[in-house]
Amino acid sequence: MSSSVVTRFAPSPTGYLHIGGARTALFNWLYAKHTGGRMMLRIEDTDRERSSDAAVAAILDGLKWLGLDWDGEAVSQFERAPRHREVAEELVAKGKAYYCYATPAELEEMREKARAEGRPPRYDGRWRDRDPKEAPAGVKPVIRIKAPQEGETLVRDQVQGDVRFPNKDLDDFIILRSDGNPTYMHAVVVDDHDMGVTHIIRGDDHLTNAARQMVIYNAMGWDVPVMGHIPLIHGADGAKLSKRHGALGVEAYRALGYLPAALRNYLVRLGWSHGDDEIMSDEQMIEWFEISDINRGASRFDFQKLEAINGHYMRFSGDADLVQAMIDILPEIEGGAEILARLNDKTKAKLLAAMPGLKERAKTLVELADSAKYLFAQRPLALDEKAAGLLNEEGLSVLSGVLPALSAVDEWTAEALDAAVRVHAEQSGLKLGKIAQPLRAALTGRATSPGVFDVLAVLGREESLGRIEDRIKG
Image 1 (spheres, helix red, strand yellow):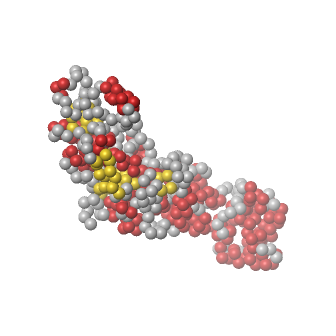
Image 2 (cartoon, helix red, strand yellow):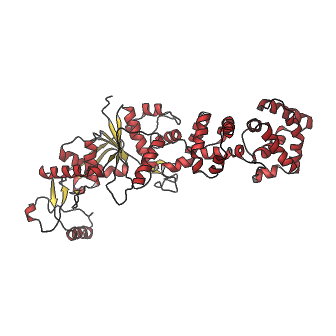
Image 3 (cartoon, one colour):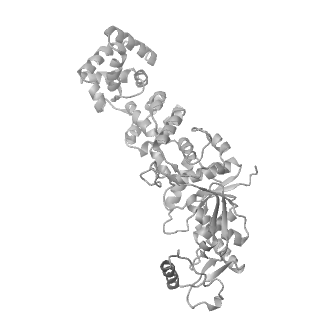
């Protein structure tokens, strides 16, 4: 396959990089990598009132965190306005577009008439063939494209199939406003052409735009890129994705404790699949990804599935990598500051030693940090409700009984501690679980934790015995 494929991701900087945009970026990135091509980034910032530098920064940060890179510098659409004007003027010179001097009052009248006749409001073409010499004084014209009036425009879509639009519905839409600024419809076509874009992968809310944009391509005699309009993401209830479903910015998923690799894996499966494969590496996604395999129906966002995939990635992550990933998000999560305050070489080493046990249970980095809190807790430990229940009179009596057995262990390893407690259980006629539960509560302040012998080993002799004694002394 040739390396001439060029895709693009073109977000509007009116807010953060939302999850639908992240998936569109991922699909463009994958197809570019799959074909040995390039993915360009264009910031569609022509709406000056709603665009902001902070939003641009959030989008770039979101893409970088997600692990999606692009080729060259990000292009600002706004900065290319002179080029958009130049093409609009060229279309007038070719006789493919014209100056329209219709006043706002005239346009309103057209809309009213269409409404009264039960038609969709359309510009009636009154300046299409008129001589600009007839222009009324003091009216700044817009430039309108001469759309075909008969037949239909066919969009050959890689996802949606052939979609036909009657040309009578396209009307002579505006490509340059009276203030000399291009419309979005026009700017997109000029930019895609100038950037050498060969494949446009975007949301299916742009499908009707595709027909209008083809009118401009054809008028300029430019090649129309291959198009693939992907269905939008819906919530679990089938309604269009909103904030309550998880239509959050990518940075929110970071703060919720998801790993970028897991989010990439989850997003690629929203609307695209490869057999029954659930878990796939970047290399596999790149190898398998084809635009034509994207589903035509909307996909549903499912937090439980995302959590399950994230849990898988955490279990298979290197311990040192997870320690770093967890530390990185501590400033953003509840209770993270107190862990950070107690983080030093010694506690970090404990965290690394505890990681094999911790990562087995956690589905997110937030859960991981929460379950690691016992390592950083200061004596005497605060108990949660269930742990306090386990440390009743009976539980404290069990602790008093097992303390001498633990104190007598020479080699403070999980194996040696396990053996000593088993011997004590046999001698005292108690089941192992009956001993482990109050022990866990005393050591971690909780009723659930990694294996109790692993906890003892990670905390070390002095800290472990101190925490048990704190409880017995009460």
